[in-house]
Length: 101
Length: 350
Image 1: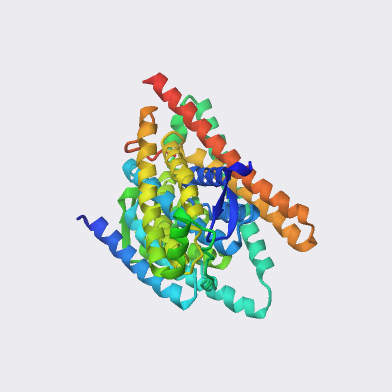
Image 2: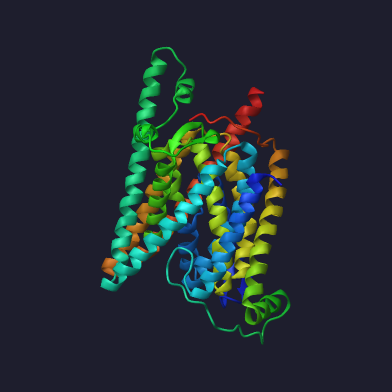
C-alpha cells in the first residue's frame, strides 16, 4: 500500500471517529447545532425495500449510517465506472493533462 | 407527472423521481467541472420542491460523497490532484470551520444574525465573481495585444502562467518551514501561508454554513497560485472527505433520506464523470469565466431570497428558486455543449 493510500485511510478513520463523536455530541457538519431526529417511521403501510430501510432506520441508527455511507460509496464507484466506459466509447477518454491556463 | 412520484419513507413525502435525477445530474456536472460540492444548489432545490430542510442537508451530503468518488478517481487519472495540498486543506479547514461556527454561535446569542450571514454571502459571491471577470478580461485583452504582435492568441494565453499578483507576493514570503508542491508546479511556499489560506476559507465556510468548495477553489488559484485544473481536482478531494464525514454523521442523526440520495446519486455520478471529463477540453481561464458566471447568478438568487426575508413577499422566494435551478441547468448545458464541440474538434484534428 502506498503512503498516499495509508494517509487517506488514516484521515478517513480520523474523520469517521470525529463524525461518530460529533453525532452523539449533537453538533453537525458545517458547525451548526443539529440535533438527532428521534422519530420512528410508521411501517404499517410500507413493504419491500421501503420497509427494510425504515426498519433499519428505526432499530439501529449506527448500522443505518454505515449502510448509507457504504452504499453511496459503492454506487458512486459503479456508476462512475459505467459512465467512464460509455464516455470512452464516444472517444472522450482521459489521460494526464497539461496545466495550461 | 404523478406517475413518476415515489414514496420516500424517511422524509415522509412523495417526490418526483425524474426531478431527483435531474437535480443530481446538474449538480454532478457542476461538481466534477468546478470542484464544488454543490450544496448551495441541492439543499435549496430539494427544500423548494417539498423536502424538509432537516433532510435536505443530510441527503445532499450523502449525494456529494457518492458523486465525488468517481470525480476524484477521474481527476487522479488526469493528474490534477495535489494530494499534499489536499491533506493540508482538510486539516486546516476543519479548524477554521470550527472557529467560524463558534463565532456564529456567539453572535447568535446577541440576536438573529441570519441577515448578516446572507449579506456576507452576497458580498463574497459578487466580490469573487468580479475578481474573476476582471482577471479573465485582463488576460483576454493582453492575449489580444500579444496576438496582434504576431504570436497566436491561444499560445499566448497558454504560455501565461495565470498566477495573480497576490499569489506571486504570497509565494515570495519566506517564512519557514517552506514546502514544495510539485504536483501544482510550486517549488517553494511557506507552510504558514498555505495553512492561513485554508484556515480563512474554513472559517468563512463555518461562518456562512456552507461546504466552502466555491471559496476554496478560487482561494487556491488567487492566493497560492495553484493552476485552475489542480485547484478543481484538489478541492474535489477535500470535498470527498468532507462528504464522507457529513454523510455518516447526518445519517447517524437520521437526517439522510436514503432512497432520495440513492436516486439522486445515479444522476450525479453520471454528471460528475461528464463534468470531470470536460476539464480536459476547457482551458483554465475558460473554467474561471464559467465559474464567475455561475456564482454571480447564484448570488442573484441569494439576493432575491434576501429581498423575500425583508419584504415577506413570497414571489421573491419563488424567483430565487427558479433562478437557482435555472443557473444549474444553464451551466450544465453550457459545459456539456462545450465538451461535445471540443471533443468533435479534437477528433477532426486527429
